[in-house]
Amino acid sequence: MPFDTETHPGVCADPPAQPRGFVLNHTMLRVKDPAVSLDFYTRVMGMRLLRKLDFPEMKFSLYFLHQPTEGEAPPPDDIGERTAWMFGERGILELTHNWGTEHNADVKYHDGNAQPQGFGHICFSVPDLDAAIKWLDENGVPYVKRPEQGKMRDIAFIRDPDGYWIEILEPARLKNLGR
Image 1: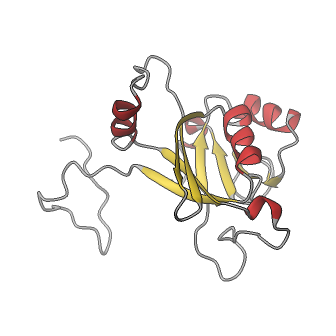
Image 2: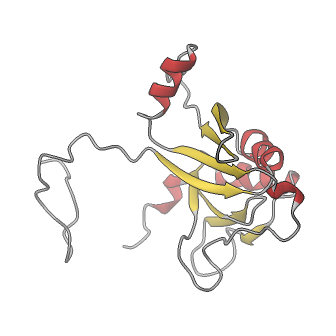
């Protein structure tokens, strides 16, 4: 029998039929300066911008980023089809920019790790952790924790331009985690 779920208190071993097909589509982060954040996520992290949606009446913009996978069909060219495709995908990053924050020195978003703690981080799995660390170092990315530091080896935490934590890991190195 193939793996279905681990069993722990609170886990529903036999979920109802109604949520079948639900997809965790995206995570949203507020950003102070979209140009700085877009440079980081597209140039340093290799994501592609799928769509920018402006909401002038509410004075904010949304930027939807996607990490292309080799061999995967590209997103549709048609803007409407691409928008619909985007909202059905997994692992989309939405950056929300409230207009004017880039000019306000007092604006700083809570990273979720300072007190009171809440949101923790997003994570990128990489094919080669050593190569990824070299690339991040070459780009001057600030670290919370390097892979050789702390009790959890082979996992790094970096900060994006707004201070959000990003975990960097190589899946093959984590086979014994929790054993």
